[in-house]
Structures are given as structure tokens and as C-alpha cells.
Length: 95
Image (cartoon, rainbow, N blue to C red; front, side):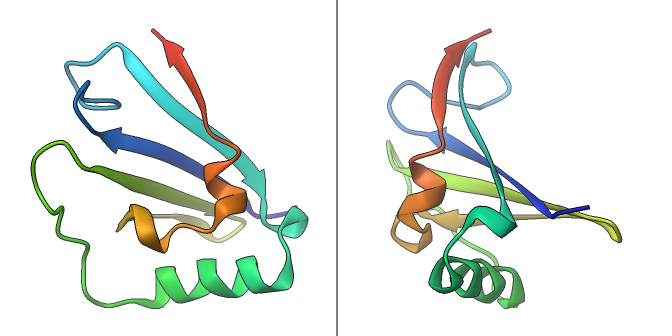
């Protein structure tokens, strides 16, 4: 089984992905489909010990969930830390 990455864009002016919002921005990527550099970046993000602290206001941040045979891990990171391949997988939808 290949590891799956689920990425959600959260926040911003419209409050994407927040509990009261009907706007969701979500993407899925197989870790095997990422370049070596992007896989290394994802590994580095999950290895961090310091949690992301949102800059405030109308700024987006990203919730990344890594699903592996051993379990599920979720982190939150700033927009500047997310590899483009993950950002490009995101699609907006209304729920």
C-alpha cells in the first residue's frame, strides 16, 4: 500500500475548511507520485517538533494528513512550506 497525502487549505477571508464553512479545499496525492525532492520536503515537515502558528487574519495555512500502513499523522503548516505538487492537487468545492 502506498502512502497517501491529503492536503486541506484552511482559513483565508472566506474561512475555507473551518467548522462553520461550506467551502472546502482538499487534494490527495500518493507519496510515490511525488518527486524525490517533494517527498523529502514532506518528510521534513512531518519531522518538525515545533507546531505551526498561524500568522493571523486572512492567511491560509495547510493541514496535511499522511496515511500510512502504520497509522495516520496530521500536521498544520504555513503556505510557504507546502511543496507546489501538493498545492496543485487541491480543488475547491461547496458542501
